[in-house]
Image 1 (cartoon, protein in one colour):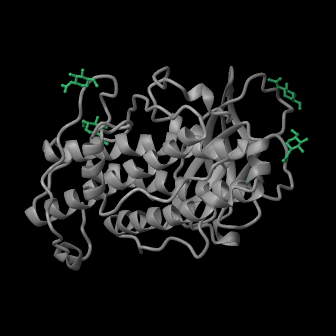
Image 2 (cartoon, rainbow, N blue to C red):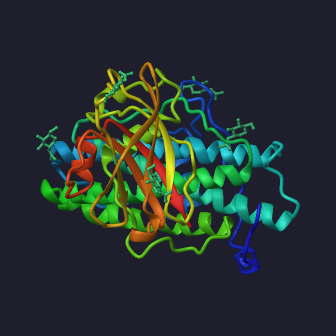
Length: 353
Ligand SMILES: *[C@@H]1O[C@H](CO)[C@@H](O)[C@H](O)[C@H]1NC(C)=O
Ligand SMILES: *[C@@H]1O[C@H](CO)[C@@H](O)[C@H](O)[C@H]1NC(C)=O
Ligand SMILES: *[C@@H]1O[C@H](CO)[C@@H](O)[C@H](O)[C@H]1NC(C)=O
Ligand SMILES: *[C@@H]1O[C@H](CO)[C@@H](O)[C@H](O)[C@H]1NC(C)=O
Ligand SMILES: *[C@@H]1O[C@H](CO)[C@@H](O)[C@H](O)[C@H]1NC(C)=O
């Protein structure tokens, strides 16, 4: 792994002693008593997070769509808590692939990740508290599995899901706004910036410039809901059924696109696909209108389809996150919602540069 800038290693803030290890009972992959920490555990989480939960009164009422927003945010943040907790464990236990040659790097990375973990814990608690405050059952964590076995892959994964979160929180803010939940939009905006700070660091560690795009790619709650579930052990989420969002068929990207226009291959399932079904690959990138390309099926075995479509990098400067979705029409789609509304398989997550 590469830590690019030595200056980053200088930030020797005060060291807090390690938080006590989790209580391995019902939430055996959750640290620090999450999702129901004791007062004492919360105090320690806040110390690690370098700050506190907001202490103003939560809004007395929240719209139905606003509640769905908070459920998705809690569902996502709990997944992130599990991820960063496991990453820290892998590093501290010196699992192969997670070892550092420099003690300074190790120290700085662990301090940063412990801070991020605690900050994510507070994000999860904040969303669940807001639900609880209006009499809605908080979202419970699941069991998770992560498709990575080394530090570099873990950081790439973190940067991918953080990109999806950064896009999805835009959707959260817009849905709050449309439903009069203005009491929640300022706080979510503060989280958007916070996640962006994390992302800058993940990008630096990959040797990328810290800031990804002038206008970050947008997303939709339903895409995030589907993407997070790819890290969930099926059947282990106690109350996922209370989240009224769509789960799409998965879309695998076979050829990883680079910074050039090319045909790329995708795999997905599409039941009852017939010879004359026409499908499109729709791309969401930055704050631009979705881009639609015809999809050419190259293999069709049962429901399993391999198809290719143009990734028109050059025409649209398609850097940063692109969300790909198979749609049965070519739109035109005015926004990400309308794409999610017609998605057959997705989201495929592409990050260029
Ligand atoms: C974990 O918490 C449960 C109840 O919350 C308690 O009964 C149990 O003794 C705790 N286990 C450990 C290892 O602390
Ligand atoms: C931690 O290491 C194990 C063993 O290599 C791996 O299966 C798991 O995905 C890793 N988790 C993270 C978050 O890196
Ligand atoms: C992509 O595939 C189409 C159809 O096979 C072909 O006409 C086009 O030239 C290809 N484009 C690129 C950039 O390879
Ligand atoms: C697909 O459609 C073409 C005509 O468009 C036809 O010639 C061909 O036999 C069909 N293939 C299958 C597998 O149905
Ligand atoms: C969702 O898609 C249906 C057709 O499948 C369409 O009638 C409806 O207007 C779409 N809604 C939005 C918000 O795009």
